[in-house]
Amino acid sequence: MTNALQNSPKLVEAEKYTSALYEQTVSRYPNESEFLNAVKEFLVAVTPVIADNAIYTEKGVLEQILEPERFIQFRVSWLDDSGNVKVNRGFRVQFNSAIGPYKGGLRFHPSVNASIVKFLGFEQIFKNALTGLPIGGGKGGSDFDPKGKSDNEIMKFCQSFMTELHKHIGPHTDIPAGDIGVGAREIGYMFGQYKRLATAFDSATLTGKGLSYGGSLARKEATGYGLVYFVEQMLASKKDTLKNKTVTVSGSGNVALYAIEKAQQCGAKVVACSDSSGYIYDENGLNLETLIQLKEVEYKRIDTYISKHPSAKFVAGGNIWTIPCDIALPCATQNELHAADAKLLVKNGVIAIAEGANMPTTADAVEILHENNVMFGPGKAANAGGVSVSALEMSQNSMRLSWTFEEVDMRLQDIMKHIYVSASTAAVKYGHEGNLVVGANISGFLKVADAMITHGLV
Ligand code: NDP
Ligand code: 2IT
Image (cartoon, rainbow, N blue to C red):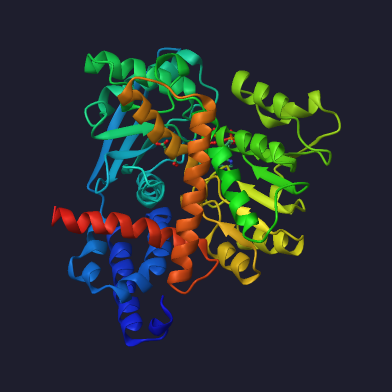
């Protein structure tokens, strides 16, 4: 908030208004804890903007923004390899299309439900706005568990899922991509089925495609690389760099692997990464080539790494945040870094934490980091590199050409810098210097809210 606003009656009014909106959301969706957490963080962050600009209240922008434009739920039936009938739930939330067609990933994980899809779709609205590219917010997925499934079962599931989803998506309406459990293989099967049903080669209907049929160079690397570019900006603000820093990265999926690669290229030593069964640790640093072979080629668990590198240890069920580090990059899933972890990281001397995953750090953990002056990069800013290059993939598809890796990577670096600058500038303007959670929410919100107002009540 501007200094004049501090403790002003306008701010008190705005706080009452956003608290009431939060309570209303709780009473509408009492069981959607992940969605409610995302809404709470957002409402608290934008309260000074509401206090400062009466128009957002007059036009009911917040009331509208909290409610998805559309929420689609559907049955996904398929046959497993033994001929048994399987039934999963499919979801797509089309949350906000004020600044562009809905855009956001698909997650296949047994935990997926309405709350998780809505929290991710809500975050995506502001993340996508921050990129400066013309994309609205959406998200989807299924409670299907890809673990232990044969390639044939994955294909059957993807085809059945897309048979319903294709009615709701398209290059000018809604463009899904990957997320947890959805990578190049799944996008390929879904694109094949979409193409067949649409009787058209609408390449810009899905992003994260293979390079042979319209994918963008550097999309695979984009989220992890973008995260590290964002961390470089955070460190540069303190005249520091990644050189010789000790880094831990949770997860060992798409985001984690390429965050590790870029951190290593920047001169950091990445000593640990994880999956849902535990973590691997090597004080001399992890070998990325082995990790990529195990995870992307052989689809193996992280514990298999130690047979190739005896100097590393695998800690089954271990908590990666107990390892001392300068920089921690949570890149697995939501709510994976709690208050106790934040305290321990602070005690062990952490200087920066940035979220590759969506909302991995709980609200009380973020508070502890801020209290202890640990730099904190929230996911909707720090992991926006993935969706940014997805939007660049759409541009290339529209132009029917493809840029070089270097060209895409340069654009990605510019976008991450721009996101850092706009979030940190908004934080300063509204009286929360250094608080990128507040800055990212405000900066994303302003763009979407202004577009919504110009469209009238729709
Ligand atoms: P992947 O499926 O490639 O990898 C996910 C990793 O996280 C795996 O190591 C997985 O371990 C671990 N993980 C997932 N769920 C859990 C859980 N409940 N508990 C513990 N570990 C878990 O996914 P991505 O790398 O694509 O996504 C990781 C995070 O990044 C997600 O939060 C996603 O929303 C976010 N993100 C992804 C983007 C992208 O472009 N892919 C863009 C922006 C954000 P295991 O194999 O044991 O389940
Ligand atoms: O959370 C995310 O930003 C993603 N999973 C990527 C979305 C996209 O459309 O590339």
